[in-house]
Image (cartoon, rainbow, N blue to C red; front, top):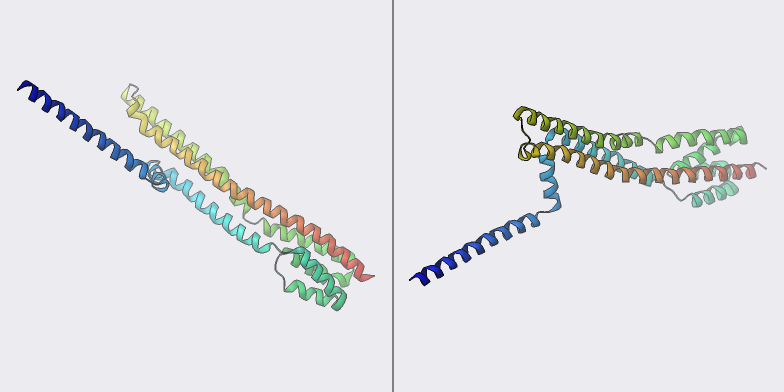
Length: 242
């Protein structure tokens, strides 16, 4: 009888242990099955709506500015070598008006600068050169439009995160002062919220910084192309005036 009782007890303990282990494995599997988006959403909610909402707004506005600039810059990029050849051929065959027509039918800042130079060639080569330089500055301003807002969002997103961290730490120390003893469970929530705001602020800044660097590199490329094309236009106009 004692042997039977011992056997039943052993079997019961084995079944209980197996059930507990299975439950733990199922829980771990559920945690692992959560996608990155779900985990990110949960962490964002835990961070609190006050600072996390502002950081999210910075990310949304920054991405909107970045996407708008990327689309504009890609549309502003033209095959300047082809345009220069077309303008040169038009000057040789049809004169200034034919070259201006080519520029009118071509999009981009380089074509606009060419048109301004061609439009002032009747006043002399020096006047055309001044028009090219002046309008080049205008086109550069158009390329850099709203980029300063993107740099602003990159700067304030981590600062907002740090501010949330400081406020969370202040709340944690206030609880310690009110209770009178240091308990990890008492302040863990506040510290977690504080650190989450910093993490999301840094993530926002990193994402926007990548877009910012791409936009600046694109602008530099277009500006260099504008300057090189402007020199070529002045040379063409000088040769045409002779």
